Image 1: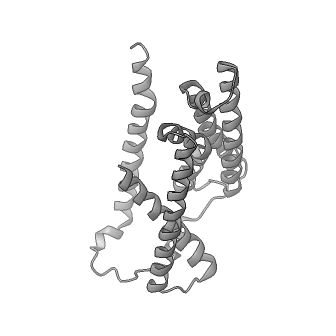
Image 2: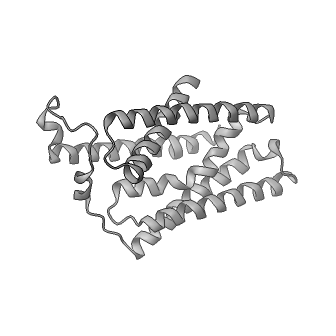
Image 3: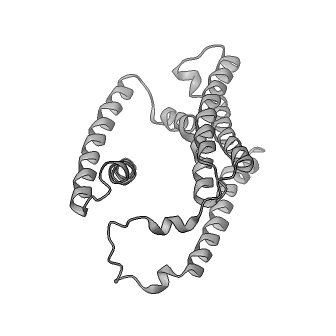
Length: 216
């Protein structure tokens, strides 16, 4: 679990830095070899950073469970804006930024306030308990989505999805892929399947299951 999670984080950060920063703003004409070189450098650098941070957190007494739950308070506000940006053409970029920032701030305030109200003190132990973590996570996620949705309804950006077809591909040779993989009707069906089962599974796991567990 540690190896797979660490690998996923390294690849995610590497892809973000390589494609969204290096190739977009620094070297738009980067070759495959240059991109690979930058990607490896980011993996090495971020890997060292994660190792040092893990040692510091361990010495400070921060458990994996605490960090996992607190992470939702800090980054949960970006979940719904990211989903909207991928699936909703009216999604507003400024609204996504505002939703992420406002949701995070209010989530942290709620988290610490509930801790103080419920337990009378704010420390590593009390902030890691269920009630404060639940309140902070919910506020962060819901406020982030609400702010972004309101901004998008008031000032829709109406993104043209055809623009994604102009994105430069690192590997332009697609001869090994069947033509049906690029059929628009198939892509639309795949999108509908993902939304149907993705949303359905999320509702069952995140809402229905916990609600049914309350009587127990």
